[in-house]
Image (tube, rainbow, N blue to C red; front, top):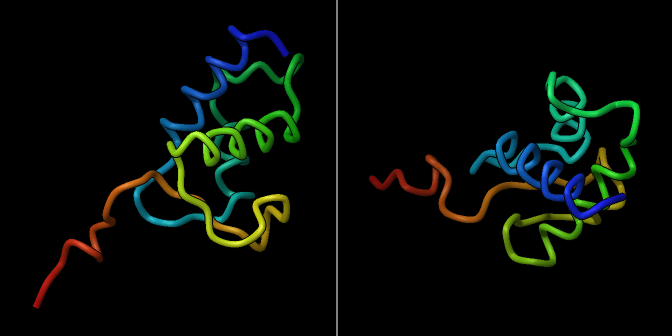
Length: 87
């Protein structure tokens, strides 16, 4: 995968990610549904690999083993709406 493709994929992932945790599989599905995603030159595994890099780079936070898409969650760093709510 070229650096330009990686940069575009990273941008799609960060745009689809939220501060609320979501299943890794759901995030990958959102990327595939995006009209600007290049389905001919990228696979779900490519998306998963970039998610892992973004977690390692501190741009996303993961819970669980992100290699297991259905059993892990990812989110943007920062507090979620629920965490910001105080009684």
